[in-house]
Image 1 (tube, one colour):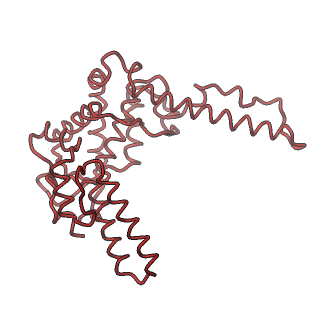
Image 2 (cartoon, helix red, strand yellow; image 1 turned 45 degrees about the vertical axis):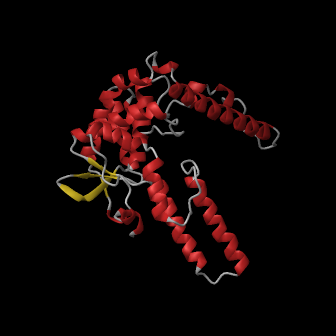
Image 3 (cartoon, rainbow, N blue to C red; image 1 turned 180 degrees about the vertical axis):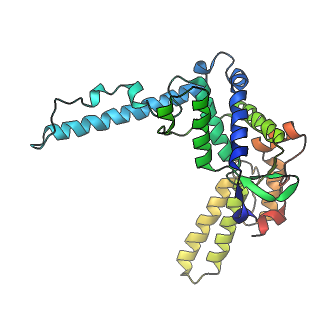
Length: 291
């Protein structure tokens, strides 16, 4: 495998891709939420997560101030306490900012880029053996830069804003629309995808672990317990797509199963845009056997 030699995508290319994504957001919002972003599930989940986080903050602050008020060393209570921090104030320097539809979706798309190259990589057809990924810190900084340039956040906030919760889960159609938008932009920039399946990689590593345990010098009972745990973990990964029993140690059979039964949103969206499968699909045994 080539994971150790992957390179971070050039910062100027990452910036251009993010800018293109940002420019595509108005049209994408119409696809995802025809009745308006604030009526959609994604926004409502983000607001619900914020409310939970704010409520937890208030609860913890209340407990803290109650404890301090009973202490002989309590602080000067003439200063403003936790009760004066409103919901809006609490999230003032968090990203995405409150009530900003465009930046909420931009935040989700930024994480989607990171998800795509979490195990898969990008490459240029002119140099097909150089593999690239998106770097999280670059994405974070460039998103803030683009938001500031478009006057969506003030200059002082652009330097200190932080993300405090993960993006909401994209369901099938939302994910498909977002992925198609992303891949259309990748195509514009001359990039192709080298696809790796995270589940297959996990199975491969678990099978390697099984073999290590099987030939180890552990006591019989301990060995049996550990190898059975590994088998169970593999079975749990393939359970959703395996209608019939599959040997969890038979990698060729599992790869054949994945090729026949697993529907991957990334592969499907890529096919719609590029009109061909990404490199790495259909899955090949040689790819997942070699180190």
